Amino acid sequence: MRYILLTIFIIIPVLEITAIMLSGNIIGIGPTLILIFLTALLGGYYARKQGLETFRKAQRQMQYGEMPGDTIMDGVCILVGAILLLLPGFFTDILGLVLLLPPTRALIKGRLFKAITKRVNKRNIKIIT
Image (tube, rainbow, N blue to C red; front, top):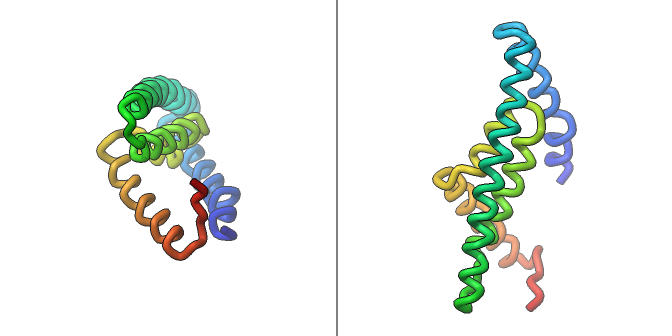
């Protein structure tokens, strides 16, 4: 947990500021700001589209009595991806896109399922039914 907080509050902001400064020096301040704004705008649109699609899929699965576990994991990835895309910066945008695009999201979901299963088996996570 300590490393996650260190990464979120120190390492990622330093990388983002450095990348924005380098981009400003290479392509200029205006194009850099426009690029950051466009990625947030397009990412928000795509996240909304993917989120609504996933929500409808979960509703259909529940109507047919199916557990929407995989779809819920999609929704969580889309939510996190959307938040990352709305944050200014290039590294968060790349990670946000990885979470929004279905092929790369599938890879991330597989790893998340394994991590959650491992914690449940070690009894670090309790599931209340």
